[in-house]
Amino acid sequence: MELSEKERNQWGSKLGFLLAAIGSAVGLGNIWGFPYKMGATGGFGFLLVYVILAVLVGVVMLSTELAIGRKTQKSPVLAYREMGKGPFKFLGWLAVLSPFVIIFFYFVLGGYCLEYMTLNLSEIGFFDGAIPTGDESFGPMLTNPVGCIIFAALFVAITLFINGKDLTAGIERFSEIGMPALVVLLFIIIIRSVSLDGAAEGLEFMFKPDWSQFDSFGKVIHVLAVSGSQMFFSLSLAMGIMITYGSYLPKHENIVKSSVIIVVCDTLVAIMAGLAVIPASFALGGSDAAMAGPKLLFVTMQNVFSEMGQIGAVFGVLFYLFVIIAALSSCVSIFEVLLAYICDDREAKGKPADRTKVTWTVGAIVSLGAILVAADGLGSNGLWLPLQEQLGVLGFNDCWLDFFDCLSEGIMMPLGACLMAVLIGWVIKPKSVLGEIGAGDKYNLFYKISIKFICPVVMFFVLLGQISSFFGLGWFE
Image (cartoon, rainbow, N blue to C red; front, side, top):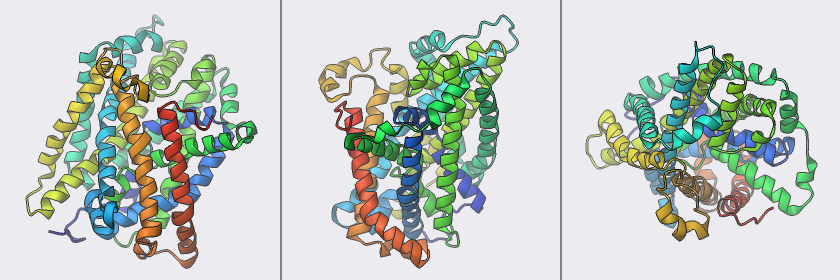
């Protein structure tokens, strides 16, 4: 059966929806991805391109996904099945498979954060100054698969507890508490970070223009691809999240205004995350600031806290609590895509869909992938070795986390975003969603130009950039 607007869950308030959407966008990718990519691609130049893309592409694609969700009142697979034509009817599967794969390693990274918060919490009150460094703690953690699985399971349980509740009592309530708490913790960490000796060098690293990054066509495309990939991953685009959240959005809510608010808030938090991480890492010595991925959080930052002495344990607890909230806000939104699809599919077939039962059933299934990633320990425990020789030539030569990240962020997400722009811009035409978006003539003109010409081109280069980066092809270096 088709769900009517009254029958379908809806957000309890506009603020609750915005906080949930912003929380989805503010995740681990912002905390380690934005600062690293900003520094690695020209600092202020990256930020400038990022902001331009957020305006020209981010707002348009975000409003499109929200409109698709609200118009169809369905989760991604069923929404694209209704709106798509020909092969585009299957586009929703990319939007579901991406979060299905991403959740494997997000659960594990959330478990790492819980473990590190516990580590620092255990050091409070012991005044011997011997707070473990990141170098001392990261390796032993990875080579203890049982511990990693236990903490990942704890993080999974917290996520499922939130998702298992009704929309307003679960995700919305968590967002109303978690997002303000995240901002407060972030301000505390920023104040401490920028006040450290040597932090000024980190600020310069972030904000001083380096226009040499634009002195060749290849470099321009590289910055465009990196900025674009961070923008659409940060905004939770092409992951089915915003279509799902849009399906819960009441008809009276202004989609364009909501999209602008989400993009602005996400960008501000991303910059603030950079201020929390980069100056502190430069204060430690500078070289570690270029670390990407998990090492930036669990080696570089833990080294910073260790250098602070006993007070470092307190800031370590606050920092990893902040990261836990950010990871949870993303995980509950990612998992909601899977949950909404199963519930919608069962209801469309006339079968009962008990939200709590479906949550724990799907959670048990995806936990199998999380156990594999946790036990692998970023390649430390040899679980990837059986495939290393066969797939190493393709660039998959590190660990299961990188493999799943490549499938989702590297291929499925940019491909899905590019195809969505082609579908709306050229196949079913912009008018198919503009009525749902409900904006004025000026925005409609801007929207048509962007969705038909700017978005497909940008997302195509993002896809090429991701393939080049993940497979080590060096196309734009």
